[in-house]
Length: 330
Ligand SMILES: [Zn+2]
Image: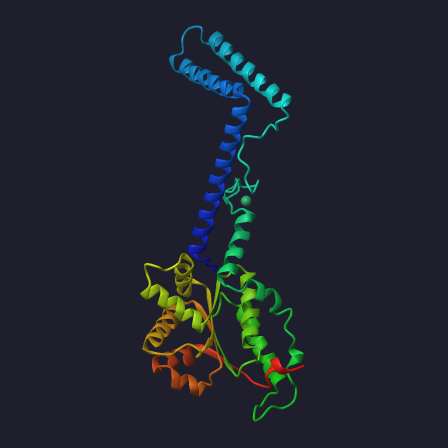
C-alpha cells in the first residue's frame, strides 16, 4: 500500500491555504489602490450590491407587478456593469484585474481539481516535500542507479572473499534494486556494512532516489543527526524547531528510514535505548529501514545491546562492502 506521510500532506495543505490567502489579500490591495484612483468604481460596486439585495427582497415578497420591477432592477444593474466596463477600458485595466491570481490555474491552489482528484501540482508538492525532508536533494541528482558505475570496483580477488569486489557489488546491486521494485511487497530491511569509501552511502542514495520517484517517503539521517533529532525532541521540547519536530515524527512514520554511519554516534545507554525503540517500532508497524555502518558484525555486537543486534541480525539482510577504498583511486 502506498502511504504518504500525514505530516507532509498537512504541510502541503497549509501551504495551499497560505497561497490562497495571499492571492486574496493581493487582490484586495489592488482593489484598494484602483478604487483610490477611480472612486466611481467603488460607488458602482456599492450600487450593484444594493440593487442585488433589492432584487432578492423582491423575489421573497413577490408583489403583483414583480416582472416589471425585476426587469427594471436588472436593467439598472446592467447599466452599472456597462459603465464599469467602459471605465476599465478607458483606463486600460485588464478585465480580471481584481480576481485573485492563483499559482495553479487548474485547481486555484486548492490542491484538488474539479472532479475531486489530486491536482498534478499537489503530486509535485508531495515529491518535493519528500525530497526536502530527506535532506538530500542535491546529492540524489548525482548519486543514483543511473550514475552508478560497477567498473570502479576491482574484479581481482580480494583477501579471503569468495567474490571479487565487482562480483560482490553485482550482488549488492541486485538485492538493492529488488528492494526498490518490491518495496511494498516485502518485509525486508538492509544492513550495509564494511569499511569507509566502498560505496555504502552511494547505494543508500541510489535506493532513496529510486523510491522517492515512486512517491515513497524516505528519511535519510546519519546516526549522528538521528540521535541529535531524538535528543532535541526529548530534552529541548520548548525550543524544538518545527523541522526537528517533523523529522522526529518522520523517523517513525516514513516508509523508509536510512540510518547512515551507525556507530559514529557517541554510544551510551540513551542512544542504545532510542535505537532499539526506533528499530523495534518500525518493525512493528512494518516500515522498512536501511542501516549502513563501518563496523563489522562483531563490532556491532560489541557496541550495541543484545536486543538491538538480535533485531538487526534476524530482520536485516546483511550486505558486506569490501575492496580498496574507492575515494583514493585516481
Ligand atoms: Zn493545481
